Structure formats: structure tokens, C-alpha cells
Image (cartoon, rainbow, N blue to C red; front, side, top):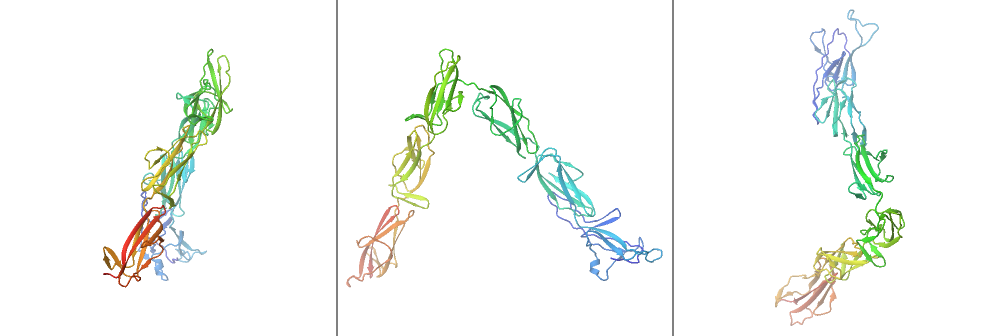
Length: 577
């Protein structure tokens, strides 16, 4: 754009302002404006620009027009982001009125700004952990916002964290625990506002919580057996547990892996210490549990308590307990020892179970007194029966299976088959539709409809099979027979219908549950014949002196369980009276 031979020029701009809808949380609306700083003029790029000039500093303004392109210049829109030039071809010496030498163009700058600032977010000061797309921060969290704008410069930066927008003036501390969303944006000096940006994160300021459980033998709350272990349970409601450590007495911390054994500890008083740290370095205070480790149990003789059955072996179950006791007529009993199946030797402290492994087991036990008299070894051999019996169900005839359903009748015999390969069967019971257990003998299922049979067996050491169920449908109802004719009756005789010659007779049967298996019929006492197609009946063979013939039709239908129905029909074929 060139302007020549003007001693003074005054440019003025007229702006139109547009408003944008606010987002949640509420965001102010920024007016599109002209901004001047350090001798530069910045215009919001989308605003129209009207150019005017004057020949004196305070004189009348005249609109600057374009003869070649009048619609492009009034108003004028700036096309270039950043600096735009309004120029005159050659500079003129105001004293001589002639172009200066050497020649130079006159540039008048106008800066267009149509781009919003860009704000960068940075978190600092706290441990960070990312899990499942969630960002967790620990204690000391703060954030910094750094805006950049390429033309008119940043006017302000605002953020919202849990409430409305606040002017950003420097690092902000985020000390509220829990899931949060940070909203932020910047606006430049000519009213370009950045789209609201957001960051989701969770602040975790709370250390994990821990507790312990005692797994195994415990006496009076804190007296433990050497086989007892500790299980530590730790939870953290935000960033999650990173590590769990424990120690005994004055020992060094160890990383926890289930379960904590007391191997290496001596008989006597001990203290377990433990604590946890989460993924953003929140560390819990140590917790402690004091206990007494007892490595010296009493001595036993042997007694079998609970489930047992004498057969080829002395059968026991997983519930059977073995207790040891001993007496000494002089010095008194000092210790009782036992070992199972020739394995490790144990000091007895409480009644125990036989190993829960099917088969023969041997318990060896002995006792010594306070003067080291050692009794002869004794042995007990038992058979561990830890397997429940197995029971099955067998349905006799008639029966029919269709659509995932077994159909029977109330005459179908039901049998149970059971077996136990160890201590043997003690009893077998069943019930129908939860009506109460009955001792088993062959039975039938009464009543039409669906029924559930539950059954189980118990062996001689009281191993009880999980109850099994079988569902059946009792169908005692035979098919329903239908006899239809191809034409309506033309009269009656003696209460029986009369049909015209060549009438066709249709026979059918439906069964509600299992379906019709056979459909038979006979005419006038003839043999039963399988029905396959409609029959045509007429009185053509009747004497010319008789007008009609009497028919007797017998129909028999059976369903797939043998339920049978029968229907007899009498009627006439010929001419009406």
C-alpha cells in the first residue's frame, strides 16, 4: 500500500468485537482490541481496519480509498500474521519536497495478531508415579505455567484448581489430596484467548496402612509355634504400595514376600517390626507385634480322635486328630517326639492331623524322661481316606431325551450307583424337590412336571460327597387325538353326524411334551393300521335300498414314552334323511 506526497498522515482504526461462550469452570470473555507498546501497534487480526489521513496533526481526517479495489480497502483486513506494512514508494524531504537521496521507501508498520498464546505446564517438587493412565504425585507438589505469544505478547495467564479461575503469578502449590483437574489458559494483549487446557492428576499425601495376620499355631494370643508364619496385609487408597519391609528384634530390614517364617529365631521373646512405602514415597511409621516363640513342646503317647473305621486298615479322615500323651513313674516326662512317614522329627505341642494324602501313613513316637531314659519306639499305621464317595444316577425305561431334557414317567425306575475305594460306603441318601433326605432304595418319581433329584453318599470316616442333582420331567399325559372331516355334516341320525359321499377323514394327534410317536386307526373293527394320509369314505357299496353307511373309527396314539390315548368315533356317510 503506497501513500505519496503527504506531509503528515494520521491512521485510525475502528474495531468490531466478538464474544465466545465460556467453558466450565467459568472463563472470562476477551474483547478484540488494538494494543500499543514500545512504539508498535498490534491489531487483533480478525478486526476490520479503516485507514484515514490528515494534512495536519489535528486537522480533518479523510478516508483513504482504493480506486482499483474499493471493496478490498474499506475496510481493510490484514492478511499476514505479524508485521504488515503501509508504505510510500520514496521518502520525501519535507523542506525541498523532493525525494531524498539515496532513495528509500517509507514503511509504516502495523502488527496483526490472530493466534492465541500457548501455555506450557510443568509439575515439580514431588515424586511421580503413573499407573493405568493415572498420574499420581506425592508431597511437595507445585506447578508452573509458562505462556508464549509470538506477536502482541501475553496479557495474562489464569488457572482453576478446585474453584474458579485465578490469575497466575508464579509457582502454585497443590496440597489437596485426591483426584484433581487443573484448568489453565493464557490471553494476549489483543484479546486472543487460548483454548482451555487441562491436566488430570491425583495427589497422594497419605502413607499405606499395614496389618499382620498370624498363620498357623498360636497360643494365648502371642505364644507361637516354630511352624507359624506371619502374613502382612498392606493397602494404599491412591498410588498403591511400592514396597513392604519387616525385621525381627534389632535385625536389618528385609523385603517382604509371603509368608514371613521365623526360621533362625531362638526360643523366647521376639518383636516383629514392619512398615510400607507407596509409589510416591509416602512412608508409614513402623508397627510392631511382640510374641514368644516356644520351641520346647510336651511329650505324647498316641490316641486317635474323631473319624475312624476299622477294616483292612484303621481308616482316618482329614478331620481326624492325633494326640500324644505320656506318663513316667519316676523322674517325670521331659519330652515327647513324633515323626510321620519317616520324615522330619517334630516336638509335639498340640494334637495334629495325619497328612492329607490318600494312602497308608505311619506315626512313630517315643518319650524320654528327665534322666534321659528313652522308651522303646512304638508305631501306629493308619490309612488316610480323604476322598469322598462317588454317586451316580441311572434311569430305567421308559425314558426320552430331547431339548436338553430327560422325560420319564411315574413308572420309570430310578437307581443310584455308588462306590468308595477306601473305607467303604456308610450311607446314601436322596431327596426329590427338596422334600427331605431319604435313605436310598430303588424309587420312582411321582407327579407330572419338572423335578429335581438330589443325592449324595457318606463313607465310613464321614467324608461326605458334594450333593449332586439331576433334573427330569415326568410326563404321564398321552397325546390328544383329533379327527376332522373335509366337509361339514349334512345331517344327523340317532345323534350321529351324517357326511356326504366321498368325504375325506383327517386324523391327527398332538402331545404336549415328548411328541406323538405312533398314530394308528381301524375302520369298522378292522386291524389297527398306521395312519399316513386322509381317507376317502363313501357308501357306494351299500345296497341301492340303503341311503347311507355307518362307520366306526377307532384311533390309538402313543407318545415317545408310551403314554397311550384312544378315541372311537361313529358316524354315517351317504344321503341325509
